[in-house]
Length: 434
Ligand code: GLC
Image (tube, rainbow, N blue to C red):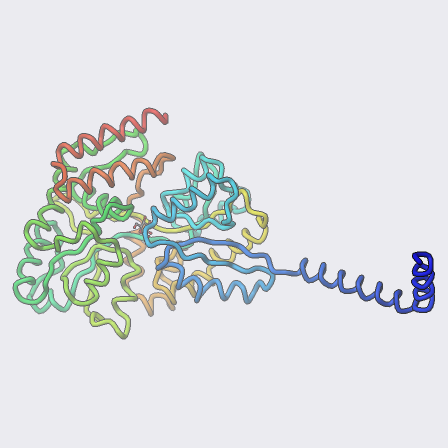
């Protein structure tokens, strides 16, 4: 029975040899085709960023880059608003060992920590000193660790004071210079025109610390001296800075909820016309001046106010790109960084999103100045801006300050006790990591 069946099969194969041959050819061609199209699949680079940043990226430079580089896709992943939460996401991905991120979008304060942990590719030999000289030196500095370069600046950022030029003018005031000018003008305008005088970021997160270093500098104080690692948190100037912020709440100049606000809460309140002053970053300018904004044409900006005899502090913020050591696509990632940091891409990005350039010549670029007349002034502010201490333990140092400062501002601890504890913890941190 079985031998009969075998015989029939052989006879069938003999008769259909041609058919079998063609099936084999077809299968091989299909396999070849699949293999080729797999090889031609575009490379995808994952890039995580804060939610407010993701939109302008997706609409602007990412699309332009993909059009010019059809073999590379950028997958922009939208994270939370707070920069420290994005940092936590990157950190836990790296610690788990198999980071899904290829391009690392870094705040100006992270590069030392990420580089010290060995999570980033060293980019020092990819860029010449001449190429780097085109960027603001402090933005570049934020990307170095132990003399090597790990991050290229995409955009700069700097804290500043926004004011309602229409209200100040109508009431006959010049923009404030000192902390007490700000309080006095607020009190007058609050009697006539606005609910609130001054808005600032008081929630326990990275933005609190960025805002605080400006007030601290305005009183002549400091947090951590980057050269000597001296800690200034238990000095008189720090207590004066905290007293100013607490006074704004006590005197009803800032809303009681200000100790829970991040940038976006303060911007929305300001943009709805409910406050005379706002401390924020330059991203607010194009939004508050948009056609649909009730504040269009009614705001001015200036460096932060200060105590008499001191100068206003501006915190240097900003973002830049590095490459994860674990990426499978380092060449594509470098290509993307070159494109995103190029003059042309930056010009288009800035014109669209109003971000602060990291390339110096763009501050005075005619097309950019036509749209943002305040940019030449901004360059000065950026060049004078203070970096938060560029130390590898920055995240922990910031966490200590955030906790105790928040406790002092929301009356959970006396400022003296809070800052004594913050100073001691910071000193211990810096000693143990020496
Ligand atoms: C902005 C700045 C960044 C800062 C953050 C704080 O995004 O560019 O440097 O850490 O605000 O909220």
